[in-house]
Image (cartoon, rainbow, N blue to C red; front, side):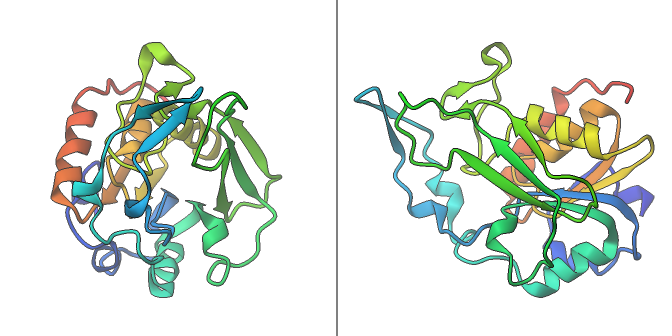
Length: 223
């Protein structure tokens, strides 16, 4: 497995995980499809009474978000990893067991902005820790650190700084992190910046290429 680390694999995650030993990864940090068909959402956003166009991702969307991952995929995720942080966990309650340890991402959206996305998102975790809130402004073109904005490549892309903070809080030296739905590479970017070993899967080759380009710009640092 060592030769598969620190790479994005253009392969179905279930096929990949079948090759992985039990508990090989210390953490899965992932943001799977929620089954909400995000590709049908409008790609304009009203701000202060005007209309601002946001990126149109329809050429990439296809059918990837029409249904949630199968129970078999979640079972494999839990088999190959010791702990899991799964964004959108509120969409998977029929598969994931109840947890008292949720992560809440508060996007800090102000009332003056018209927003057609949620003001916060929830991540299910397998940890036995108190629930935790991360407050990080991320509303369309407006981000918390405007001098170091993430370029948006994916309609459900998470901020790299948010994932870096989560990874820092829930990992230790020498942890191996896996993301079976790595998309445009945010988990990889966060892990590389912290000096963590990681790997991920992504079915769409365009996103693999985008993620690898993002990784080229990351300067790894000591954990």
